[in-house]
Image 1 (cartoon, one colour):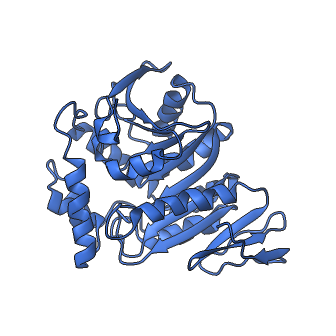
Image 2: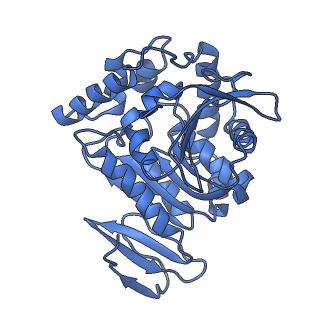
Length: 329
């Protein structure tokens, strides 16, 4: 019996759209957490330590979207179609309502799922994210795409983008890549150059400046937690602030000495960070309450209808009804 994500079998499920999706399924619980992966990555690129930690208390499902890794079909070149394909996977698995945790391009997909099929989503965590239409997001910086967009990406190039320059961050990066490559049998199929091209086309289209598109996320009525590293060169932290300011029930946190891969389990306490994503997101599910992490405590504000969270200030325009620091956070 598998005891770690690194030992789980690759499984397949056939969906109504004709795609056979590769996935891994671990843990247990009523509402599963579905993970949405980042640029060019497959099932093997999730840190096993991260998935194992999440699955200790709930069911966690990872999958390759259409055309990615071991899944059949052709990778679409729009975020909207990626979201519809992810919805088809959720339906094929008969999951009912889910929580979503999207990372990077996966966080774009998570936003679209929440907009297209809101009833199947309970709450959302968006890691290293940005809203559609934000100025300056039309493609990544040359140094970034040169590192992660070439046909073969080395572990050192991955670490350069995903981790900060401090010795502790680089050490965490090395430990993460070791865990990702420790599995030698039954590895997922590698992503193709066609997938890389389609996904980057989708990223560039998502980043075309469009003030109207920016307003779409205001329709997301779910509890949302937005998080990023403070030195992310791929999706700059100010986009997370922008995104959290546009979503009515969003909470934001940035992490020091961290880049695109702020979430890792290692020297930077990534396990605590993902636990915090889960904890704060769970609290957010309480109707009308928004929570702000202040040091090691959570601060709650009960909002008047229609008010919005101001990232980084812990305050709302208008008249918040109550603020307190519950001991259970």
